[in-house]
Image (cartoon, rainbow, N blue to C red; front, side):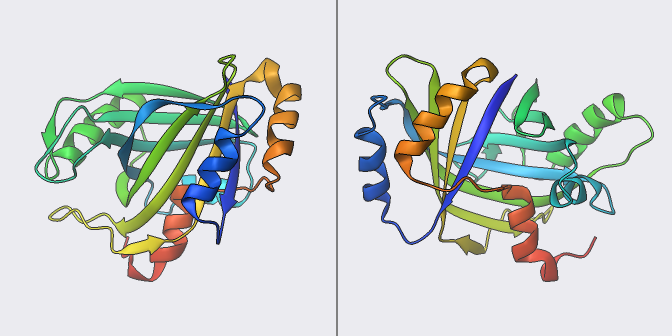
Length: 213
């Protein structure tokens, strides 16, 4: 299991934030090419998973499908992810799905969820996409990502659309649970305020008046 600290940044130019990270004493460096991340989130008809996050329930879950790159045509290497979280400590269960089209994605996911969550019904609710940059400290103990260009839309089975843009950026600091003390020093240099930030609940708040569930 790992810890995740999140920081939402407003009004800062992306290149300024990147320089702040590259000049960090922990010697962060890019370890992976930037790429586009795409998510579809699943929830119950009464948004139970979203409500758990909004209400600060200590033990909560999130269900999403993630894939990288283009959103047009075939979805390449989509993965169903079930994130379990207790406060800031989280873990993920990953279930690779076959390449598919946007139209048959719901059926593939429903089959998997039916086997895992008998008696519960989930449906696709939200679409989210953003650009992610990846960094790693020189000692390999801390991972850091920057997400920008975030956009959201209600799930429409006939169309991939993310019409609502979010101008903020999100930094995530990720590390093993035993490194929590040292992470304080990493975070202190950034000079940012840790925030409670979920792309899922953020997206729901932006598109809520568009959703009919």
